Amino acid sequence: MRTLSAASFFPAVVLVAISCGPQPSSAQPAVSAPRPVAAPGKPAAPLARPAAPSANPAAARSPRAASCHNGMPFDRFLAELKQQAAAAGVSQSALAEAAPYLVYDQGIVNRDHGQRVFGQVFTEFARNRASDGAAKNAQARIRMHAAAFNRAEKEYGVPPAVIAAFWGLESSFGAELGKLHTLPSLVSLAYDCRRSEMFQNETIAALKIIDRGDLTPDEMIGSWAGELGQTQFLPTHYFNYAVDYDGDGHRDLLRSAPDVIGSTANYIANGLKWRRGEPWLQEVRVPQNLPSSFPWDQADLTIKLPRSKWAQLGVTYPDGKALPNDDMPSSLLLPMGRSGPAFLAYANFAAYTEWNNSLIYSTTAGYLATRIAGAAPMRAPSAPVVQLPLNEIRELQQLLVRAGFNVGKVDGVLGQASRSAVKVMQVKYGLPADSWPTAELLARMRGGPRPAAMN
Image (cartoon, rainbow, N blue to C red; front, top):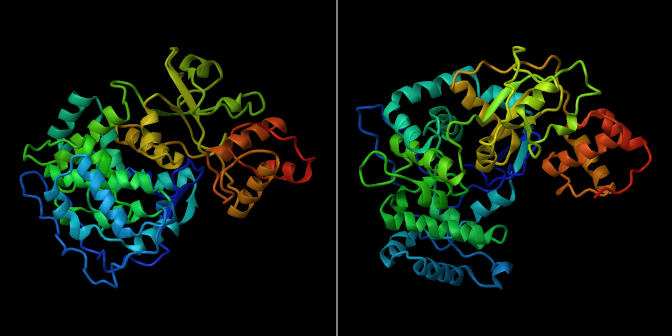
């Protein structure tokens, strides 16, 4: 689950990290990615096992002492981290096995600090990642591994479509797992000051996975941020939620499709609190002929109304059929404002935003799951939805800061704080308060009197 990159703050456009720093040093060589799982009845291809990281002192030289560790050099930091791991129950044999991989890699830290992003609106991202082909491919996987999917749904209450959507989005069903050793990534990010405590815990969890016998250090290959397996679990999630679904005595989320399916269902059910038998996302249509009277400010994931209330307000299914006249709580989700696609998000949608708190990723994952389950493609907007260019979103954020809002980093990326501020200002200026920034709002904020500070 990709919660580590710069994408992790409810953007109005999805953020895709691209590498801009040095490639990993020889302390962490690139290796061949693990092969996808084999078809039923055929043995899985063996995972590539690269050599241990280079012992070249120049390649693995310790960095300048990190300020957040009171000037402690990396070697001493690592010694203390090993002591913490031992105190948490990691055996000395596991620590010794992992030792060649517990090296600092400045290239990983450079990647973490130097991420660059580009934006895609929801419809563009969904067109690429939740297409007819993506849905059909996932349906084929469900048929291929029907026994594991059926077992997971019975035991955990998570529908196959939900599992398969995450599986396809995260790794293309095991084809894209990453090519880097995990332990050097984790320990390097643990020593770095940006998220040190988090990655210390993730390093210890990875050592526990080794100690439990699920994977060896050289089998731990994944993304630069330390995520593992075909649904990209952080090591803490791997250790806590991975299950042995194929009965071989190991929890192998890199090569075993049954283990991937069962473990993903376990995490969704017990880690993300999935509600058995309930929906997660449904496309709807909002009335476009009443733009001034519809309560657009109610379109917010923090606001839940009964479906009967949305029906009274004129919200229907995409084909015009009426919503059920019941009390099921739901939120109206407008990822691109009132002119874009519209969805009712139910309690289970929280599992998606917890998995990855990029609003566009989570909406795409939920929508893809509905397509896999048989829903029709979403309706195209009646007219193109205009997105402000990056420099104008940045200017809007600056104006919001002047108005007294805390929008976080002024970076041209419309996160949840910016969206909330936009909605407040839309209300102030008498515009439809759908949280989508428009040229009209920007013009009002540029030319109108400076608004009073908002709390």
